[in-house]
Length: 163
Image (cartoon, rainbow, N blue to C red; front, side):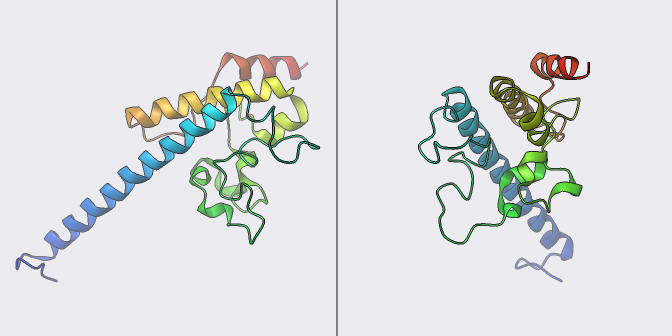
């Protein structure tokens, strides 16, 4: 294969890698925008003052304006298209709500666990800690985002509920 300038196939591969690098940089920028919007939503009390479904508890990520299916009353978008899916362990990506299985701290606490074992305030604090840590890692360009978010709030929760 030869590029438009008559170079070898390596030129085409380099251009392809450069394009993928740009796409990855844009994806990271988009992910940062989403995570920052979610953090602002959590910190502003968005889950405490729901505009929709006030009759039931609000689900973190799912009832957020950052969710692909927020206020979508038509055919739902598959969660596999959500940018948060990269934080979901592979064994949980096919769950009905995969975002509930994102490890939020070093103990592996997930929203699925927090919904059963934590108070609303504890859950919001742990998610906010995970969001801050993940944003900081992405801004530094750290490749490992899934380990983000170990906070004193989550360690305290683990200690409280391990008795």
